Image (tube, rainbow, N blue to C red; front, top):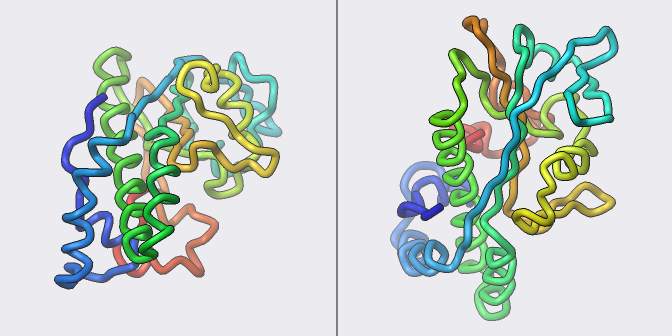
Length: 221
């Protein structure tokens, strides 16, 4: 997958900037956007599988762990199939952030936020490509472990299901942090019928009470 130009306005929003960035920040983002775009190595993997709704959670075929929480049950209500996918922009992102931070902390923040905008672009592109191959009359938005009351510990189960370490070099620590850090796992439900209104983004996020992004248009999820 090849990245398009990384949105500098999106990157500035990740930096906590409301509205257009000032000349200094815009200059830093301009300086590093092409560097970041050319060095990152985006990749993703996915699998389609079936699911069964249970009283105490959701059973996803091929994953032994029960998916618990009311939010994921609401999210997948009416779905009989799911796409499990993982995406990353590679360990190059973490390396580049570390390198820049040695001499310029402001530039390191800009690079970090450019990489965050890049992984969202990768997820959007991946979803477009997946659903040119997989028939999905109706589908949900991306729902990741850690959203709402879905345990973040399920990261491990999703990566194992996808064989993500071998296929795209994506692993998870004991504390459920992904390596490389600029990576995403997600669940997308597929249904034959229209889905009702679903809470999305800030409405479902556990950080909604304290997150600065919420008051600046959301974090992009």
